[in-house]
Image (cartoon, rainbow, N blue to C red):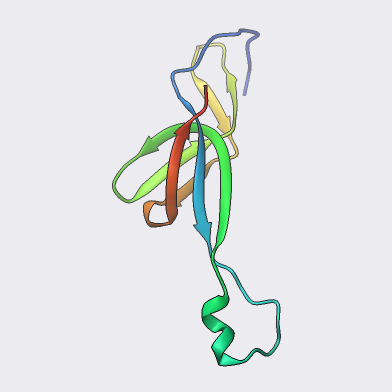
Amino acid sequence: MTSMTSSKKIKYKRVRITWFDITASDETWMHEDNITKTKLSECFDEGYLYKKDKKHVWIFSGYSITEDGSLDVSNVNVFPRCVVKKIEVIK
């Protein structure tokens, strides 16, 4: 990775993704009536929206502009669409 010093604007929109993750019980034992009281964790990630399709959403949160003008990216995350609640553009 060879970066160039530039404040060149990139074409990707900055977004906040709200998504749901699996939650595990902290209790070793619980009564079965309490099973449905366990809720999913609501999570948030921010980054640049690289691509989305019917099944996936890809974001990255770090980047470097190379000497030839292309991007090197870091902190890439891919989300299954079924866990994504909302994608908001950050202005």
